[in-house]
Length: 48
Image (cartoon, rainbow, N blue to C red; front, top):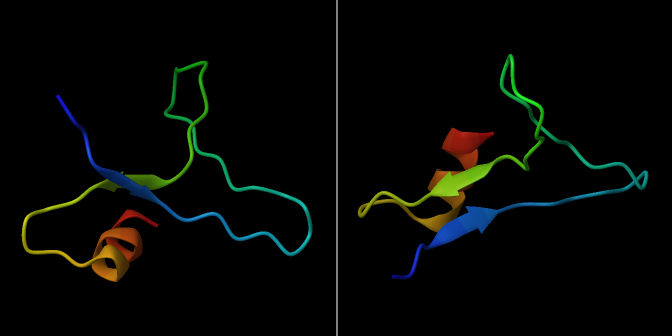
């Protein structure tokens, strides 16, 4: 099974944006799975 996801990392200060859901321990990078009709840009725009 292949899971296709997209992630955007941009750093100008050496810092990265991470997210964590309330009550969770693990952090993750913003990003997400594509919808069939979305472009890469639309997916990132909606996730961030």
